[in-house]
Amino acid sequence: MNPLIELKTTPLLLIAFVLACLALSPRAQALLPPPAPDGGYPGANTAEGTDALFSLTSGIANTAVGLNALHDNTTGTHNVAVGASALASNTTGSFNMAIGTDALRDNNSNFNLAIGFRVLFMNTTGNHLTGIGAAALRNNTTASFNTAIGADALRENTTGEDNTAIGADALAQNIHGGSNTAVGSNALTANTAGNSNTAIGASALPDNISGIENTAVGSAALFTNVDGSHNIAVGQAALSNNTSGSNNIAVGEFAGLAVITSNNVIAIGVQGQDISDSCFIGNIFNAMAPSGSAVFIDANNRLGTITSSRRFKEDIKPIGKSSEALLELKPVTFRYKKEIDPAARSQFGLVAEEVAAFCAKHRKQLERRSPLRRTPVPFRFPDVVATALPGTPKHREGGGRCAGSGYH
Image (cartoon, rainbow, N blue to C red; front, side, top):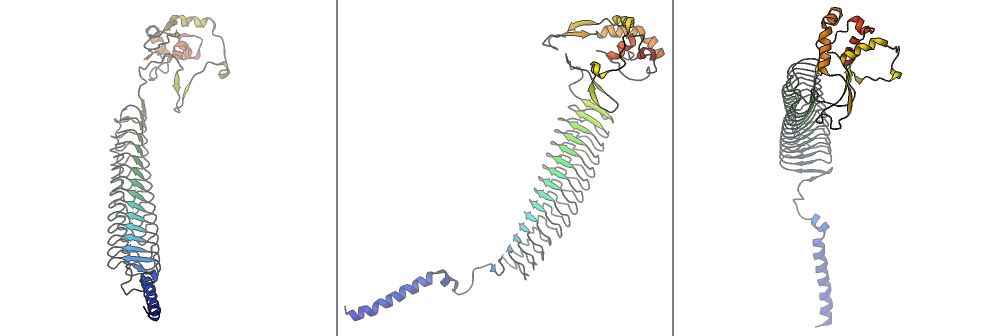
């Protein structure tokens, strides 16, 4: 080949190679003819879908994906709308996230999260709201600081604030009740105006409408309560038949089941009775305890035991021959049967039948003297002893608690 021709051909090949490389570079791609990459707009905004971010003016860092997503937004910033009409009416609200058709559609507030179909659908000015699940917080308009997780959770709420609902239909009917906590399917589902209630468990407090400050822990706890207040029910179906009673406490499965309209009832481990100002505790009656101290209760409902130590007493005096009357009570030593006390410890005390005979013998005399003869107070062993001692104040007053004896 002619050397001159070879030199002329080489530059032409190099030029063609350089041009090919430039065609593949990013800069070369940016200079390609339109259309440009879809959805990218100034101010770090992204819009994809018919009329998405249609009204945008100065808002920044918004993302709208779907028909009419963030349609009316003008100056709102840092919003995310994914789904047809998500955040469609928002104009100035910021820091909102709506994922789902019509999620936060009417919103014009800040710091809200909506995930699911028509979640927070009607919200306008409520802020710091979280709704996850179809129609959760759907009707919320101006209330703030609510959390709803589960389909239809807090669905009807409009103005009630500081509520937490977790579970399908939890607090579904609540309208303006506030500071309620419902965890479990249908928990507090019928509540409309009740405040400061706590329901944990499926169908806990489901019928409550206006009762306040109730606590129900356990499936179906306080199941039929409508307007009773200040109740505490812990355990499956505890206080489940209570409708309007207040200030009741029930602990245990089916505890307080008999309570319907009464107030101030305590039922622990038992169904109790529908009697106001009463207390029922299971596994005590006829349950033998071979040793220990007797428990007493005073007018202030304080429980305690009586001690014999000198340091707790005053005006100690000998009773002399008067104590001989105690022998009529025939004190004995004994051991409980092994099924009651496997250790077979030696005991000292009285026999119920002997005490009953003593009481029968002195009944008329005691009833004639006693100012307590018409008072339904069961006697205690110290009362029997005091009655047997002529020199004691109890004997002088007539003592009389042997009548109606419940000594076992």
